Amino acid sequence: MGKLSILKEFWDFLKVRKKWWLTPIVLVLLLLGALIVFTQGSALSPFIYTLF
Image 1 (tube, rainbow, N blue to C red):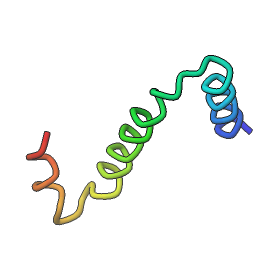
Image 2 (image 1 turned 30 degrees about the vertical axis):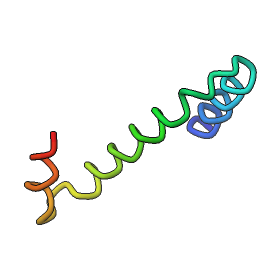
Image 3 (image 1 turned 45 degrees about the horizontal axis):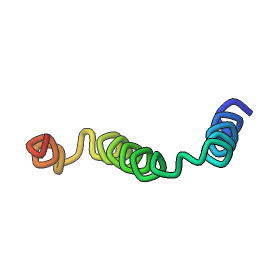
């Protein structure tokens, strides 16, 4: 219930406040976070860390 309620509350915030410009920013941050988590400890990690 915790994670789903946060997502639902964020979605309601976007709808009510008309802050649609936040959506791409949040998606990019989530994708970068997932990229770092999934490549941690793999052979790709030295190449990804050089990007930052």
